[in-house]
Length: 92
Length: 92
DNA sequence: TAGATATTAAGATAGTTGTCTAAATATTAT
DNA sequence: ATAATATTTAGACAACTATCTTAATATCTA
Image 1: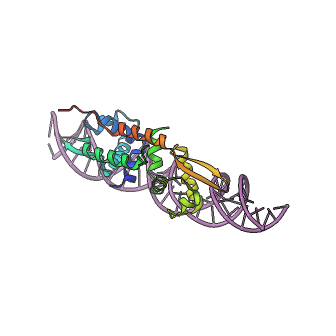
Image 2: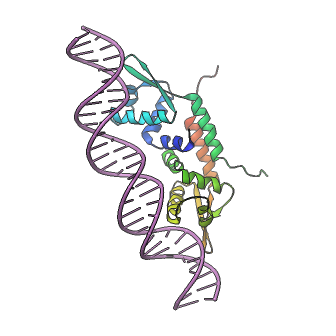
Image 3: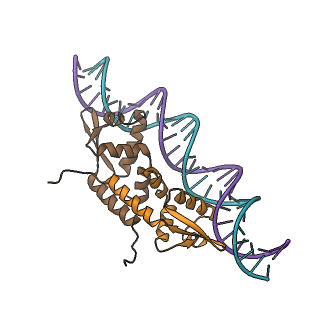
């Protein structure tokens, strides 16, 4: 999973919102939809992008598909980003 | 400066490379160019995007324009991103 | 097995992005 | 002043993205 793909996945406001609402716990597609101003197919598309970036996972539960954050992946990504954005300088 | 704009600025591989080479110190446009496979105008465009995202600054030095990272901004952004990607959970 | 509910897939379209070439601007040196 | 060097601006274009409507698929319930 490349850092570019991660940044790209997170660069869209709706997708940031999805990550944000999933922090509180897993949700079905319909539940996520209530937090956004897009149609179901558009949401589905965004979920697909986040899934390909390995940021979220889904499982079927009866009629519904439940999405949740990949917590361990998020931790790794956070580390990677910190490493990328941190400049090693001489300490005084 | 929004988190979306930051992510968007950093989602392009050439721009990541620019940030990366500037970690070692400030460079002129021509010097940065040597690390990338694009034309000068394309590089100029990417520098503009990074500048608008407040990630880099430029100053003229004679015939050259010298670019450098905005270190304090990078630190703030890192904090923001960590905050965004970190999920507060109950500790056992 | 129908009908209802939930989600994804397909196809179209407008807007955005990355790239280039050519031209303009700014500084230095002759 | 003119020419040379360094960088940005303008304009064009192909590729990509976000969005929608319509259609297809999957599951549950009666």
